[in-house]
Amino acid sequence: MPDRLFPDDSVPGAFQVRFGHTSQSWVDPERPELLVFEYTQHVAMVLEHTLLSAPTDRRLRIVHIGGAGLTLPRWVAWRRPGTAQIVCEPDEELTSEVRRKIPLPTRSGIKVRAVDGRSGVGVMPADFAEAVIVDAFDGARVPAELVSGEFLDEAQRIGRDESLVIFNVTDRAPFHWGQRVVAGLRQRWRHVALGAESPVHKGRRFGNLLLVASEKKPDFAGIRRQSNRLPFGYRWIDGAELDGWCGGAEPFTDADTRHSPDPSGSKLWFS
Image (cartoon, one colour):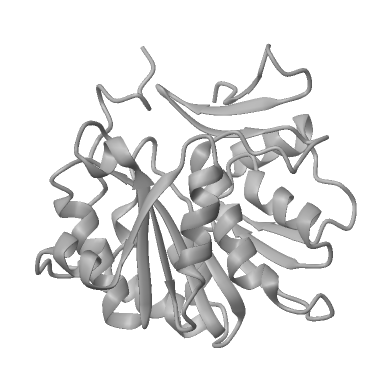
């Protein structure tokens, strides 16, 4: 298997994780607070406005579906030391390369399990974690088994307290695939919001959709304000506006689920 972790020539010590034509992760192990990809900045921002506002004497547990360079788990460990984190990453060769080239610090609280997200979540007990973050790709596409209603049921089952789930997925207008993912979330969690860069929302290009669902209503006003201050701010929608965006879409089930659209020709695709 060829290497997939490549040094960033412009930032000494930093690495990119590349899968074929797509760049899926960027990490500087000496500066875990430095998040380059806009979606990682927004995941961190959402965590700041939700889970990380909990009292500091409360030990949190976060489940990550998808590991790559472990960018977000490293950020959480830097931002809130002592957080217990479980990463489900089935690609053992990639994990071995990451550990060899950019090892985790001692006592990071991050445990990587060589298991796919569906299987990993399936064996976790009920009320296991405050948050589940799904950032997993099969090549350049989100695996179908991670967006079906049956998987969402499992993610809901292991959630406790606000039962926060965050999905980083990719799609393009008219968003028929993303609409069905959001519909599944809205069937199971009380509060759901979607964020994306304006050109993606407007259908001008393929890109990331960040989906946030929770039993406790997040501070969406604060999320919008802080997002607008980031270099590539997202437009966030929820409530009635999200109703209109979904357009009556039906959630996926295991019987009819499918991978996210292929990004060929998009900015995520490198020749």
